[in-house]
View (cartoon, rainbow, N blue to C red):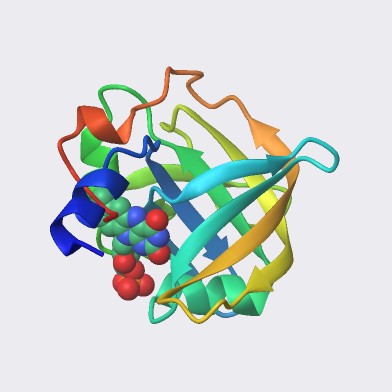
Length: 159
Ligand SMILES: Cc1cc2nc3c(=O)[nH]c(=O)nc-3n(C[C@H](O)[C@H](O)[C@H](O)COP(=O)(O)O)c2cc1C
């Protein structure tokens, strides 16, 4: 396979941008992700691909739950903030105000909207990311903004 063409072709896939969070008894992790899609109506479920060596991966694996904060149009800064993982400090995550959802995961009040998931399955297919299938168990309108598309940012995570 032509490596350069592979990169070019795979980078044509459209994504949204999301801040994933997860809380266990001990830790809270967060990070910007784009590899996410809905995969079932009944039950409502999504698949997310999470880097194996990340703290986010560790905490989701331990807690069996995660929240997805959808980044809105005009909120590129929010996505950029969470390229680095943050824990909760003084009641804020990466400087953003939060509340705790029914799963105990932090929800960013300023996000476009958010939802919470319980992990149904973790798939290790031998890649550098594992796929977590999450059943959607709660939803939050938050600011009810339109969502930001990855293509609008000029960033890539893929190829
Ligand atoms: C544009 C962009 C998209 C990203 N998408 C993902 C993703 O889909 N899954 C993932 O695990 N990490 C993704 N990352 C990396 C995480 O944001 C980053 O590893 C995480 O915030 C840091 O976590 P750590 O400190 O626990 O390693 C992405 C990074 C960038 C810059």
